Image 1 (cartoon, rainbow, N blue to C red):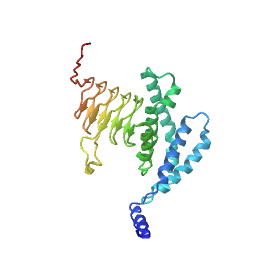
Image 2: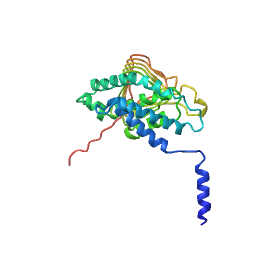
Image 3: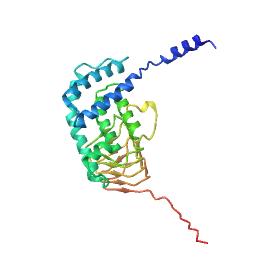
Image 4: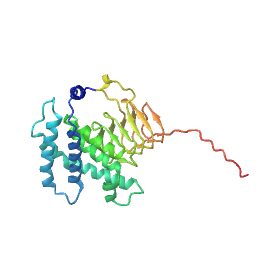
Length: 263
């Protein structure tokens, strides 16, 4: 075995493409700090905002290795969005509290509900995505995905008072549009009907209008698919076409029960 040759080959191939995994680790630390700044009563906001600015600039330096770096004024613009994001997240928490009979307090929502955490990180990442910040928003939502089992692409558009119950297995695609007061359960997929690279700039994921409830393991696919307002989509439903407002959609599997008499 030519050890030096193996090392040389490994070093040559690992540079294509260039990857600095510190970016992933630092993004996760930035995400935690940002979350605590918004919600933890013992975290000083003024001190943390200065810390977050330094962390963010470090992230940009690592993320923009082959792109033009955003201006130093970018962070100031992002900070101005934080009060609005926090207001939306408080509405999300209230929606969960009001809809879930198992919730015992608003504090429980913020600290123990994976759906809320996933929504929070999505909302914080979405503003960066909207400003074309490279890679960082996706790393933020993938961090939440790993912790909660909820995969929300930072490009999705989500309105006010959003509720994900139980959370695990939820998938929301990049071009999905969700309006206000929508409630979804575990295992729901808002996905693309077709997967092809040339569809990158097209709307591939469905639109969910206001006041819709989507029950567990329902799958809704396609960029032209619109679920009308006030509709209820039952568990395990599979939809690739639009549903009018005020509709109820349900899947009816055949279930047979055979009981053996006591001998």
